[in-house]
Length: 308
Image (cartoon, rainbow, N blue to C red; front, side):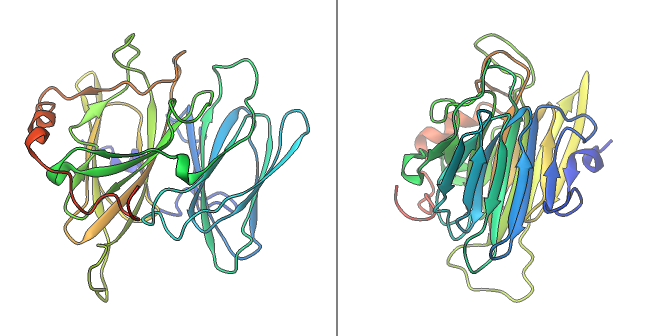
């Protein structure tokens, strides 16, 4: 039986105050991660007390200013360069620790869109410092090959950003390709093999880059999540810009970009384990697909937003 109604959240349906998207532990069955997305008019701002969570401020459109008062009372100000859209390339980000007060303000003339990706910070004894990570320091990985080619922007992984618990990245999939593939999972603590992480997928979709604009086009993509008899979950979701799919457990993938529509998603992960690591295992029925990539080229449309 489909469980999409529980784990798929349409844009605006989880809104909270100034946030059009607000995924928090207030949702039944959700515990470790959060995501808030706000559209800010010129001079508009949002405020947040981080409490026991750490936050990564990710500009989706525009370049917001970030002001943080940390747990010591020290004030930090960061002007984020941002970007024109999520398809324009990586962005700089700002890491905000737990026990802080955060304000994000749009200084520009046009509207800006900002994501606050969060995780419950439980692993370290004290909050970490505020940090600004420049776009030039974000590693861009071209993963897969052929029709499984995608671009991964690793701004919030353990090897790049020091943090307590959060793991975050962006994935861009050109029209007609599959990503989050082969299907994989990370819902058990197995030393050196797999880590237990719940995961948020936030989507944006657009008409294919370079394509002729089409009146009435409806950019759409698809996401699959499925489980095992002992832990069932069954999601096959049609998603549009601003929609969210939650992965509490189970195999997830593929994320599918239909012909004609480019797909972006922001991933936010965290879990209860003592180690901050992204360790996954493939669905054994489909893991063999990785071996087929050796003879295929990476999609020449990548990376989006220009060479890196």
